[in-house]
Length: 205
Image 1 (cartoon, one colour):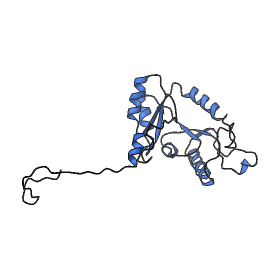
Image 2 (tube, rainbow, N blue to C red):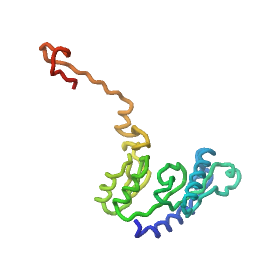
Image 3 (cartoon, rainbow, N blue to C red):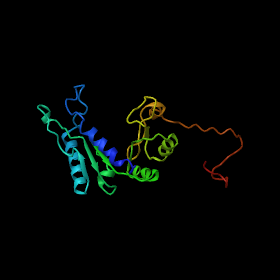
Image 4 (cartoon, rainbow, N blue to C red):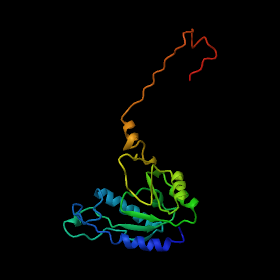
């Protein structure tokens, strides 16, 4: 919300700049490399495009300096961008360590901004108001909603997205149904004669 935006961003940037990059096999590492060189270049290009469109880089925004042998790895600095909804990065999936931030004035605007994307995998709602939490969760066009948390998943809880974030679900009963096929068997129990072509009021269904 705009009333806490400045303070929230100050704390977010402070947290992001403290994230430890390094060897993904080291338990002290908090963030490893991205999946490939192509992914790193795509992330860099998206951030650069956002910068050209007027985004303000509050943290990161480039390649980190890593010690050998990790200097040959596909690392990208944890990044925070202050953007507007008109920028392409607001609606596109970066699939990298990039956060985009926009303030809002009301619950309705927050929902509208959140749904302003062709994607809809997951969202998080942070509030002390349980009624607001459920009300907003119901309005979000996503497959997963966390309340006052993020990225936790129970094996019994379905995992999957809406819109261009895919179809189908993993985990839980919904996932079990993905591995089954339905079969319909219709039995006519009426012994009276029936002819589709002769009965004028015959209907399918």
